[in-house]
Length: 557
Ligand code: GLC
Ligand code: CA
Image (cartoon, rainbow, N blue to C red):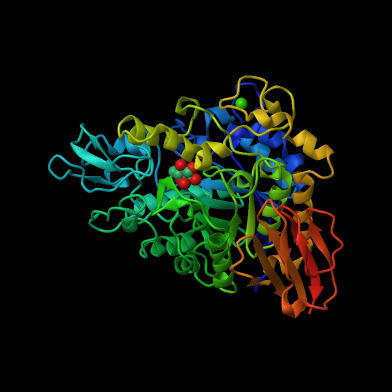
């Protein structure tokens, strides 16, 4: 397998609004990021992906852009960006920019023009259609509730928005739109970007004729706009016209709904499209029939089946992106671990898994100190447009059980990951000198960066060590993956191997003791400890694993 920097890198994701406020207005900003670069250097990450920091009316916290070439007022100025970029590069940290190209804000000048008249030169930058009688052009649903179409009285047509009403979808079939986006990419490359995370990257191509979607699975219509094979022509063009000119650049697509087969097309080693994609299978196992408001309990065997399948199937042909959470998902320790008694142990166990799989690991801010979900009592206390719209549609208008709805938000809501970063135990967790834009998790006195840096047993110190080890270990990055005891509902056991080097990974996903039997072919082999979240002598063998224990052994064939 060909070596390159982004395969060996560990990437850190920043949600700027909640990272660090430098001027007391309660909103995180670019200067706040610059202040904390030494902290990221200490953790040892190679690159930082920053969620959108461009001009935006903030209907969706920056994922609704009104100017791709300017900085959001709340986040600072272009000078602040230049300084941040310089300071990152001075420390050897690369910068990944979030490219939101499926849609803009309705306040973007292109849309302001587009909605003016049917023959405006920008009309075709977006997707306008006549209604069907009194109804919208088709039955597609917005991912943020309601119809995906909004009627605009001025020209008597509907425009498409797969997200909020204020996020009209760009028309990627229009070559002029694609050229605009490529220009935006070149602009940020010139300004120092080392890569792009492509937002909603599986949704650019909409089926010709915009046919109605089937009912009863996920967002209605998604089979007509998500991972439609014709999308690959766009990516090949993007590669030819932009990406191929910058061989060091990294790209990662946010491809909801992607299958292994599609992923190989987007991110195959010889496909000349993107470098890697985020898959969502493991993150959506709770959803009954793709319905994000109807949750079930997921057996460990199903989580393992998904993760192992992606490991096996992409091996040698495409590259995985590894993540446990991001700004759209719950905290990993709350989701898959134990946010109570075994918070530290389970957070360490989960990141042991992430950093011993093949692919590029992404660590979302706050995960490195084991931050947990937020639990607010009423919907009014939440900020996320997805949750608020969902409440309006399902509870306020639809009569759904409010308690059941709030249970879903507590378990899976996007705001779980958006509470301000917990820097220390002073007021507002040291995030701001003012009033934070969103509630700080009340557990900040116990869970914070200051404490984590002082305590040698903290989650932070452990993840730092995992990163250091990964940087030294080719088998952790490139090794083949073999799973054992697939049917075990408590343990995840796998081996990584490269030439004669091996790592045996043993993970206890429960708060109880579990017995582990060493796979036959490793019996009698000498081993040493790679890492463990408990005292561990490093010799592989049958034994009892402690609650949420993770043990990784290095051994030779
Ligand atoms: C992606 C982003 C999410 C955003 C949406 C619309 O899924 O991660 O935060 O709301 O796209 O841009
Ligand atoms: Ca600020």
